[in-house]
Image 1 (cartoon, rainbow, N blue to C red):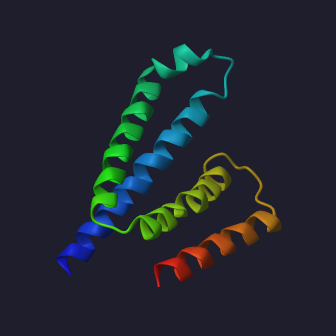
Image 2: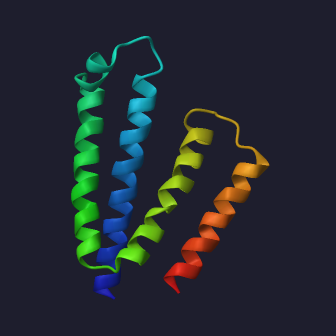
Length: 113
């Protein structure tokens, strides 16, 4: 049970850091700022740090998982990106995109079984 909780915690931290990196850069990039000023801002540096932590978490996850299963579960990132786009940035989500989310979930389910 403890191993499962550890794996779950690793996945949650991986998703949180990855999604934060993407959303932070999206938010910072909405103005007319140049790339270097975005990257070297406090928010940009925190996004880079989040991606670095995400990469370390990914290596840790891979060291204890099968590649096919880990990569498939990692696809949940795409679903979380849809949620972030809709809730954080108020972007519309079309039925076709929701179908894609459902197909990703089905794929993750079938690959991990």
